[in-house]
Length: 452
Ligand code: NDP
Ligand code: 2IT
Image 1 (cartoon, protein in one colour):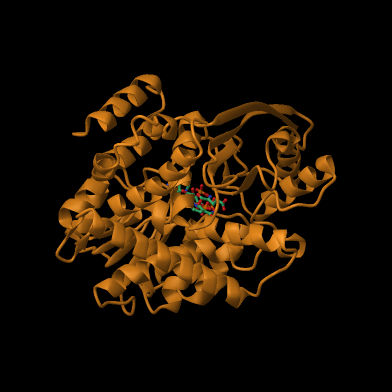
Image 2 (image 1 turned 135 degrees about the vertical axis):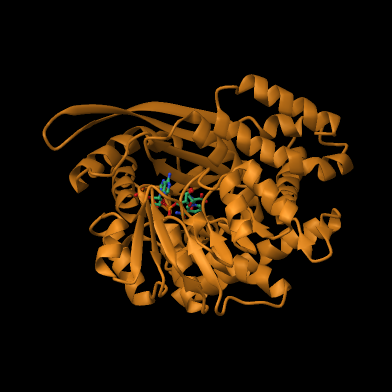
């Protein structure tokens, strides 16, 4: 890194957080692209803005004891990382997964600060979760875990303080149990969580929002080049919330979606996944909580590849929608070799920094998750607005707002890239555009609010 201030911060972050690889990866990705902005903003260093941007305002860590159906006791670790509240209450999801630790949640919280800034809505950034894995647990076990988790978390959150939502392995079922326990302990009915059920304050289109928003963003990228999705072959990884609705919107826009995956392997459907097949997947994943391999048993046009990743499939566009570091340098090389021209991230940090470097060097269209997956949290912001005014907007109204927010984010990334000379002919560096646009707004708010 050439800028002396950026370089100093990077060395300090590495020294202080040496045992947090995911957090370091996320910070490095951002710092390497911020230099053009930092060069032009001499006020950042005397205000210690970068120092404060890389340090969470508060980290809460707690014990979560719970009992399984057989009466055995278990203890998991719970977290909430309240990263930055310069532009609004902390906002961000909860992840329940074996992989959850401070490094993972700090990377997610750090990304969330910039992502929420891009949404144009007044939301700070936070993230939380637990190393509890709901796979294979009964509904009652999940309920008891969620109640115990909230029995500590409730004192740290609130509709104007910190508003959690779902993330990996935290969907409608978990949010329902968490909300019920919060309401019971606090004895108040507020929009303290988003992603709630439609009968108790949830917003229409929140379930669809991350996946739909991703495809709205990618549609805008194609539009810049005079293209659209009709007839394009698309690979999608994951088969959870984000993947399902990314695939759905792609199908609606005329693309041919040929893959879905989970952590065991992927399915390739040569005929393309139709809405009917996707409805079957939704039932499989959300109700039966089954594995994607079952798709190949159900539909003869599909094959299942155990232990493999979707990136080996020839495609025009790729949408990583599963998890961090699922798309590495060799995967990027494979995609490029097979002619892939667009990668838009539904997951958070799915491509590692070496893979991103390959996309940028090849000058394909590449959208970083913090811009292209921001539709989920943006619609959470719309759920907060509806809860505050005690009203529910129609699906069409929320979807139109989501679409317009994604267009705004796209244009903001594009125009910021142009302003800082990060375009080259047809090529647009959306990654740097997103990081700079997200960062500058938060930095300006922090400077205005003094040393806090
Ligand atoms: P879900 O839990 O609904 O789905 C996750 C999917 O990814 C599952 O199919 C899961 O399979 C699969 N998966 C998990 N780990 C791996 C792995 N190592 N390799 C391949 N597949 C894997 O989560 P979401 O869809 O909500 O989240 C997916 C990503 O999108 C995450 O990175 C999340 O942070 C991000 N995101 C989510 C938003 C939201 O609103 N939900 C908003 C913005 C970003 P398995 O069952 O085997 O674990
Ligand atoms: O990563 C994310 O943006 C989310 N998991 C959604 C967060 C939210 O508050 O809706």
